[in-house]
Image (cartoon, rainbow, N blue to C red; front, side, top):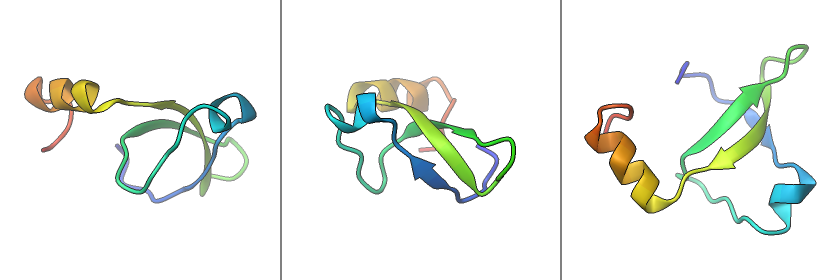
Length: 60
């Protein structure tokens, strides 16, 4: 939510069972030593995104 575009790295445990497409809502943790890169740690499902938008956590 900081508005920075980053290159995301998907860990092997997620890569095998989760497809991530452009426009998906994810949690990404920036690297400490390279701020332009991040690790993707969670992908929200459509119902979760809808809930976050209704509660005002995301701008719809």
